[in-house]
Structure formats: C-alpha cells, structure tokens
Length: 189
Image (cartoon, rainbow, N blue to C red):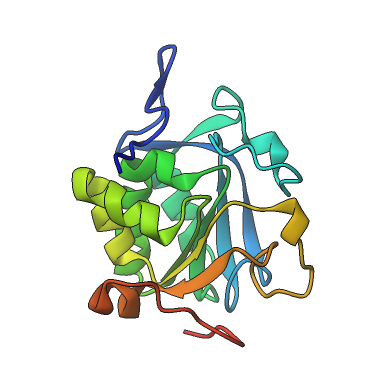
C-alpha cells in the first residue's frame, strides 16, 4: 500500500517548513487535551474533512495564520506550570517538519507531547518509512490519538477522543513492539 502526505504546498503557500507553522490558534492552558496542564496548538489545514468534526474551521489549508516556532516556544516558556504540549488540528502531520522543530523544543523543556491525527497508527507506520521528519516527530511523541472522527461512533464519555474508533496510543511502548499499545483508563505521564 502506497501512502503519501497530502498538501505540502497549496498555490504558493508553503505548509511544511522548519521555521513556522500554519495555525488556527492556541490554548495556553488546557486540561481536556491530554494529561495535566497543557499548551495546545491547533494547526490549520486538514485533508480528512471528517463529518461532524469538532474543529471544522481548521480544514481549509489557506485559512489561519503563520506563526513562527520561536513565538510558540516563547509562549510555552511563559507558563512554568505546563506539563505537556498538544498538537491538534486540523492535521498536524501535514506540517511534520515544522512540528518536528517545535517538538524538539518541547522535549528539551522536559514536557510530554501528545498529537491528535486523523491518520491511523498503521497508515503512519507506512508513511514514516519515506518521510524522515514524520518519523522523527513520531519518535518524540509520548501519546498519539489516532484515527478520523466518525460521527456514527461519537461517544462523549471517552477520554481525549470523540469517537470509539479513535485510539489513545503509548508511542514509546508501540515503537518498541512495532504495534499500537493502547492506553486504557486514566492517561498520565
């Protein structure tokens, strides 16, 4: 099965570079987008267009605004109480080079990293073979919430996900066994 990243460029708009990200917005303190107090970046652009998506305004690759990695790092540094950072969307993995740069800064600060993606772990396992920045980004990820939102499987009682098909995956353990290791129950790092 051949899988490729969608939309690296869109009519002159570069979506994947090391210095900046195309984002829809940020939340400086969240307790619902992963364990502990988190800084959340909502990227702009998503190829999945899930029916019933919680963030449909993030789908258009041309919307949102450009934000430098340095500016995001400074905003993260303003809060010494943060326990982690969450990359959400949109689809953060469409901007893997930029999010990799930011992930390196996050890990240098000893913060944990959670990424939401509409791709499944299995599809990403294939994609990362031909995309070095994606591979390195996934290696730095502590928790991955994978899979598209499926409206017919919507379940508001789930922790950190919106539909039953989505999984909360321990990426460190998953990389060791080369298969998704699911986190059941309370997620803590």
